[in-house]
Image (cartoon, rainbow, N blue to C red; front, side):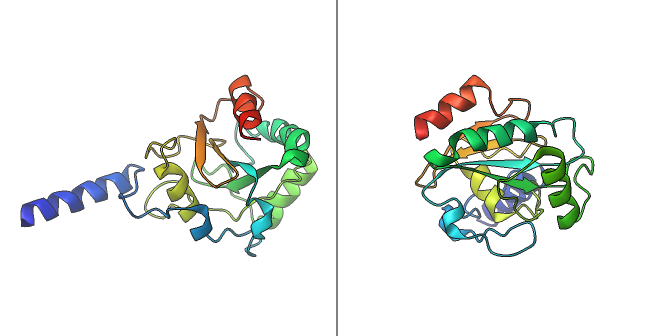
Length: 185
């Protein structure tokens, strides 16, 4: 019995170390997660509840940063139909999001005209992974696998269920992303 317990504990530690959270530790729904804006204030529930939402971990100094432009276009194209994008800055990939909340906001609005909500900076991998990313990763489309790089995308339906996961290199306006969004709208 002790061997089984030790084996389970070792397995859980290994999953955390390499990007997988222990089973059962992730929130079971978005309703259980308090999302905060870039400046640390609670995000109003109506910002995304009942909407098709694309969650994207973002960074200002990444080769994929120009995806902000396409994200803004996608947001503009579908927001009146109940679509939202929530950007989650993370500095976990080669320090590519080192700025303060004000610096991130300034960069995003000035350089790309970002008008969708940005969440507070957070860890998307490891032992300090945010509850949001625990939830996204432990979903069926998340597959329990850690985030590979900046601009990984998770599409959530109006009921708060994760329906799709798209790799960082897949552009926000790629046919498979647009088709998924339109199917959920």
